[in-house]
Amino acid sequence: MEGPTPVSALIHAATMVTSGVFLIVRCSPLFECAPSVLLFITYVGAGTAFMAATSGLLQNDLKKVIAYSTCSQLGYMVFICGLSNYTIALFHLSNHAFFKALLFLGAGAVIHSTSGEQDTRRLGGLIRLLPYTYAALLVGSLALMGFPFLTGYYSKDLILETAGGSSTAEAKFAYTVGLITAYFTAYYSFRLLHAVFFGESRSSRTPLVHTHELTPRMAFSLAALVLGSIFLGYVSRDLFVGFGTPF
Image 1 (cartoon, rainbow, N blue to C red):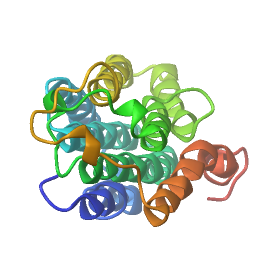
Image 2: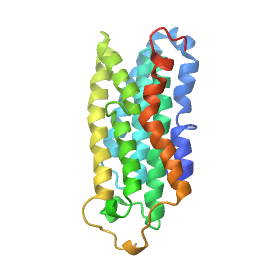
Image 3: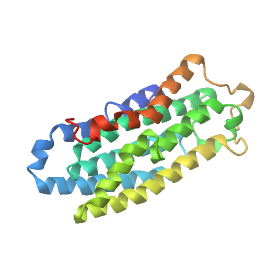
Image 4: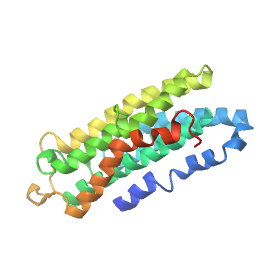
């Protein structure tokens, strides 16, 4: 989260922080031979989802809120691996890459447009100056929340349904914690949007006259991720979790 924003987007969406989930999925035959380890994974994943979401509630740095949301979503993926549903974890991992990259690059667009300002307490009122960036961040935030029929909905809702439909104690625990975490996710996502784009500007350092919308090249990058954040879950759900799929 302290690095350049495009690097943060790449790390949080596709490479470093997601490799642990991918490793668990690839080693699933070994984990299936160790039920006590799966139990441990379930509780650690649920606890991570909750811990990171509560941390995200109180952050004021634009990128830190999104970074903690990554940690929280990884908790979802880990606890569903602990419940032996590895395909759903990989499905959410794939979906998450799109809307998390969109959120980070959208945050980068705000930071770029306001001459490097990341503190949400010094922003506000940008919806009139950055309507395109606001629309992109709104799509990414709704997908992160699991808003119906966006990409995040198809995998995040399935994680909660699968955990809630299981009769084991650890699954019920993970479901309860995951449901509470989903409410926290919606809260800090809307809190971020409201602090950055609504109300009056609280900037004391960056004159609003220098705030500008994205260049065409940056706008195209966000547009590609917006399309993925809206349609990817619907398009790929049969591949990952469709009935009879060999995936």
